[in-house]
Length: 135
Image 1 (cartoon, rainbow, N blue to C red):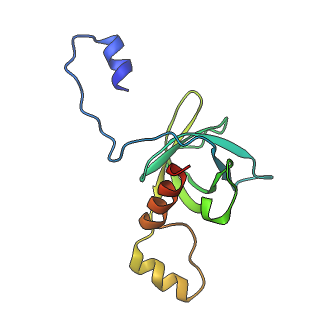
Image 2: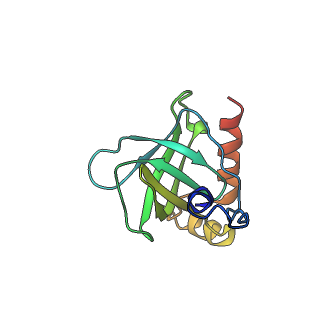
Image 3: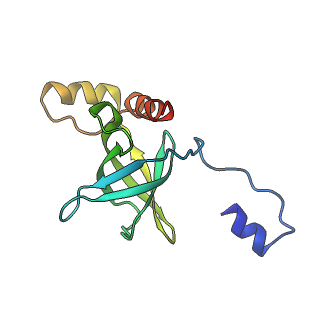
């Protein structure tokens, strides 16, 4: 957004970065969505500990909850995949920006005891990203 505003209004002062966490590119990372039909790979433009931007033709309404699995297609293994939920926060011309829905640890522990836990917590997402960085 800063670059677009800068093109339209070059005299504007520099705007601060609003993202909480830095984005990074992790080659080979793909997202599989569980909506209608057979899940197919959608490549990830960038990821952070709080969200993800995915190349896709889907344009879900902001606020839509999406279940997905992220997989390292370069080195397929259970340790290099993660299941999570994310909420659509914006559209782009080539995909969607989603914010991860993070489970509160206390709620997650309670849900695990009754077998209803699904998705990921902050620690699991951080570990997943660290594993992919090592490649």
